[in-house]
Length: 183
Image (cartoon, rainbow, N blue to C red; front, side, top):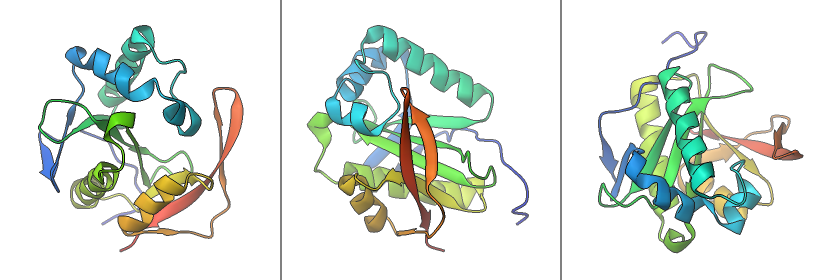
């Protein structure tokens, strides 16, 4: 495998395993997006708009579709039944190194504590390794986000000794640590 090339992201036709089904977002999911993302914890750890209302959901879905059409990212609703979105998994080229695939995820408040985040991340990571074949699969997590760090550890990610990743989210700088999927 040539790890010096970047990659184009194409959404999977179907991604299922570990009791999780990942699917593309649909227009009918707008109210579910609001239920998932209009939450203080989502606002704390993710760059989504806050408050997150129907207008924000429409803009979010439009951005997801634009990124997908450009081959830059894939945003998939995380479900257990193929229907009701309980969260989301994102796959995108890392801003630190475009040869790396970064995963991010969010689980709605009503669905936390059930292992869904870990199962969705594991499924997406396995898909990325098998089908996309980036140089590395990484997670970038705020050190104060103990729940996300626990998910990383449970999904075979190790904390790297790389310098922190600094990003601006809603006008404030966030400092993230890089976790990489074990070979």
